[in-house]
Length: 220
Image (tube, rainbow, N blue to C red):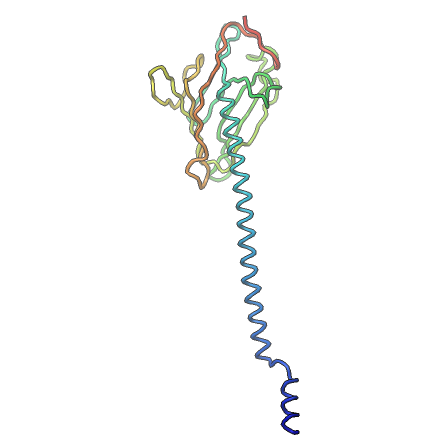
């Protein structure tokens, strides 16, 4: 009877302090591992979302810039032709924009890298609707529309190919009264070898004496 009482007392005693400490340590270790796994999963999810947004941003920038370059114009106004002014790090030209911006009519376009704090740039697109009679003293009446196309840009490089047997890629376009056969726009972002490389052919040239407003163009 005395032995049975001792065994019953031992079974009712519960866990010792050492056993409780072991359980707590194991629980803490499991919680730490679980938090690390969840943190890794959340970081991967954020990276995937960020990467997808960045990819969509690049696709949009590439599509818009390609359309604008293809719609580049040389305009003859008051006897003077105006066209592309291009350097190695940016360009300025006139264009008839794609359907999404058709309500603006003819526009003046600037594409360039704008330096930010630190080493990186922002690829900027500036579109200025051309006012009534467009050029000379009239241009600039409308405020330019500025859009950040890409962040964390490390290099913007533009080159121009004259064509007609000339295969050189010029770092600047000196001929303001004509357009190059091809325009190459290369953009690099931090951490990537190349974000995109546009090779587009300007299509249109308008001759004659032209008068144009925001919504129309008449040439004689």
